[in-house]
Image 1 (cartoon, helix red, strand yellow):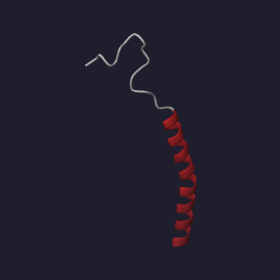
Image 2 (cartoon, helix red, strand yellow):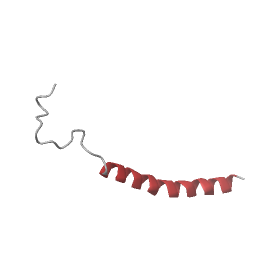
Image 3 (cartoon, rainbow, N blue to C red):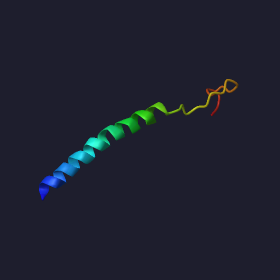
Length: 47
């Protein structure tokens, strides 16, 4: 009874681990700066 559960649990982790790693890399690469590119504004002078 335990063996099929262990096998399916291992299979789920073998699928989820690479998938979550890809999601993490994509999320990190899609991250943008908090301040938009606007050369006419001096962000240091704003309160």
